Image (cartoon, rainbow, N blue to C red; front, side, top):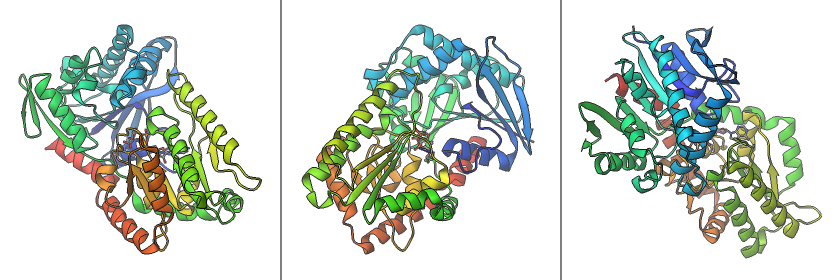
Length: 455
Ligand code: ADQ
């Protein structure tokens, strides 16, 4: 019988997948629980020597295989090429990309290492599902070792337009290696189109509909927008709404309206622009002064990668400046919290708020936008204000208030519209969005990808 083998940079611990986990972890665990199988990836630890025999731990029908990286792997593969070149460039921040050939070599080396582990693990009918930008060349590395199993790849982040992609010196080799997969999944049709454009114009591949032929290899390409489990998120938000931390938050708000944002602290999320837009609202709509509080929750991530310390400093100084200017004895306009929270509590904060402000400058999907809607009470829902550059915009543009995160006044207008929206309009937008989320939930995402891979 065919098993599913999932490979991603990090493997969730066995206890994850419940309240603390994000989309990739929940989606992958879900897929594996149903079919049984193997999850291979980095253990998150560093050791002095390269190891090819993974640590194996079985939990019910899933075998977790993890390997440590060396400090050198970490610097070149993870911090260097993955997060110092691919992440910024795929999010259109070529100004932050720092390419070195040595990092790229390290990236290829770790991908070859994962392929070697796969070679000693894989059985004839197994299907392999590779996740995200850390592992783009893994399919090719597998083929080089003679692994002929059905192998698919899903990219969680945007795929950039060819002119941006071409700033990465080994762009051609990278995209050629993507053609070693049988199936390539992207978040949106735009990403699919960007990939097909590159394949046709820069690789000279034959593109027929969503099928790419390079040499004798055929790769199918499709959009598989990742979803959430809306009913589970709803229950979670209801359960946590009566907890002490939430009561404290509400008491501090008095009767003020609440705007909420939750992101990893990352330059792609548009946090500084968002703070400035909130200030613009206070500037141009004086009726909101003292009447609205903006809560931003953003735990630091990737602090040892270039660009991340800078965004943290910039955000702290922007919040400080705005609060310094507008704070009154009984009101602080921006409450900026630099830490991680229990998932249930986050969903309950969403449920309590009037506006969810999700304004990335670029985002593959953005699950917070979906979680925000799923957490709302149907009788009095809050409004989602969404960036047109989030992948989620493709599905949610008809129910959200859409904004351009580069347009401060436009975002302030969007906030005003959301804060003053009549109940009937809020309900009808919410109902539309809930139907969209239910129709394309996390199980649909997984099932569509895996059945196309098997086809
Ligand atoms: P991320 O860039 O991490 O994911 P996102 O899709 O928003 O972004 O997922 C973040 C997850 O972490 C959400 O489930 C959220 O609730 C949770 N989270 C965020 N801040 C938190 C905090 N302070 N405390 C606790 N939990 C927090 C990448 C891509 C996205 C894509 C996903 C899934 O960049 O575009 O949507 O993968 O494919």
